[in-house]
Image 1 (cartoon, helix red, strand yellow):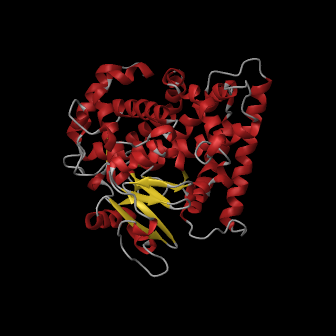
Image 2 (tube, rainbow, N blue to C red; image 1 turned 90 degrees about the horizontal axis):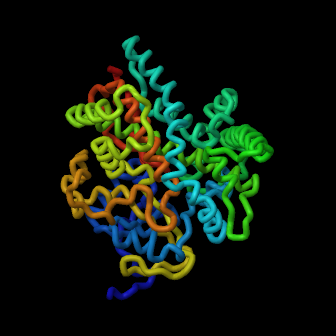
Length: 447
């Protein structure tokens, strides 16, 4: 067994700037820099983010130690904790007993059978996208794929959450106010210094957006509580959730979970869909195979959750996209009690980060790791531990099935009726913030 080391014996890593550490390099090109460092130092290395030292984990076994075997010794990292002023104590930000209680209460609402009933709402939310694509095709106009995917996934999450309770004016508020709140939340996680008390324009705008969204959510919760039936949408399932003593979520707790689902739920699925369509444009032979599959299975009818199992080629393309471009590419954790990771000791307060992106692009586990090859998901041998796009262990993303349901239904409808071609192959650079995004606009011709 490997001897545990003291924190001062952490693995080597780049020295970086005397004060800022590796921050300048990370801000310039985080993924390129971390790939370069791993090539020189191996799958476990230390890196400084300003004054903070972080143990970077790019190896599946050590990642499982943090996320599964010793998950109780870690809490969410500092950047995620800083989202509490935006999201409150939802599942993304909560720790300890609050998180455990909410997770147990909410888990039934996210079971596959419960979510599959929402497929009709998701399909309905996709129809405006199909109309816009038809208009673009008829007019010979290009579309910006990322923007379109953000629009459709926001509508899909809103429909899954609230069903018909969300009025048109409510949806306009959500579409107007959620983007600045998301932008502010992203900036908060990247900030080296905590400047929350400063009334910056971005902070004032975010607070105003939060208040407008809170008003919509509060009204719908109040209406639903006064109704005879809680409803069959996701909010109805959350209202029906009970803890071991029979208590339910308070209005404030419901608000925090709804805001978390809005902010964390729609952007990650949008980036997955954007990368999927980008890769299929670069691999027209795979796109043709998937389109033939979708058209044969669906014909002219509306897809349902049952169709997911009948679309193995589309499913393989989605899995391969998640491998290449995990939306939550970096999982930061902070030790709350002594832990040993990869043979190195992490003292309370020390920071570790599981680099999902580099694990899923490791040549040790994936032949041609940077290639888009859906064939590897069609019966080929692979290493399950080296694939964790939704995390692992007790804190695995509770919305993973909802994300896959949305992505499959939306992409199936789109690929059945349209072909999106990205001239020049689109941006090759990646933007690594809280989530992973293309490094520039993805403009496509609609055929």
